[in-house]
Length: 389
Image (cartoon, rainbow, N blue to C red):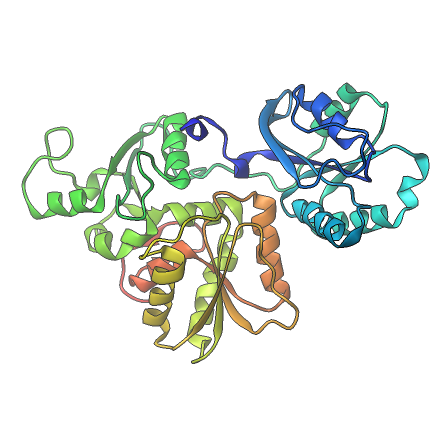
């Protein structure tokens, strides 16, 4: 349960250390963190896979520090290590190049590294072995990251607002805890000073059908709240209760707003009517987890797409850091999760990849809202409970 007390990886500054073998990357990582994060040895190639450590580093705040294998590794296995090291740049905010020699800047490995960083918009800082670690921290602290992440409820919730969070507890719910998006929304309600009520869809529906008391000695009525936030999978159950208010959104839609480009995802809904029988849809998730029999990505999203389009579609799936749309891709639509485990930089990269490939992209929450007959406002993550698509 210790992960419940930690800042999520997707909300941390990601700092990764790169260089050639035996440049001193692991030694620097240990000095930078003040801990023995990485194994240090004079043997070239000691670090074989990226090693990450989440920690608080003043004055930076919550960070994820990653040590990588040398980019000059050789052989078939070595090339795989280089590939895994460069893949770390997908979620890196600040990359530190650790050099032992003055002429490393002209090496082919450094040129490949610089080109990859430019393509991904990653800030690069040079560190020569023997330089000051404290000076490196100050240089990193001075970096102005352009992709600032706003609050999940920024501009939507104010102090003393009453917020209703609707959280299904079904076979896909983890045992003994809430999933990360629910945790973060509830915590942000507390930070703002809002009053947060949490219930399951069944409790809300039961309270609507009867006069039984549910909260504070009275019925649990949606109109008593300023904003309702639901798991997207419950839209179809609860939508009729919100025809007279309050504002309604979902955890996934809030993350699409915070992490990515909500307007681009709303535009992706318009592409649904263009799908044809046999078209390929890529369903992507930012994390990896055990698939349940009624899994949202592999079962519920395909069903929702079939309901919305009336088409027989084909599906491919990706999870974790493996997200690419090849230039010759035959994908007609990307459906992406909320991205709670990803940095804003990575979510924006994925949206940009889809855009450059000419492939529309839509968010899980938006798709499930549309499948429930709900409208989505581009100006805010509020779903209005009105019929239509």
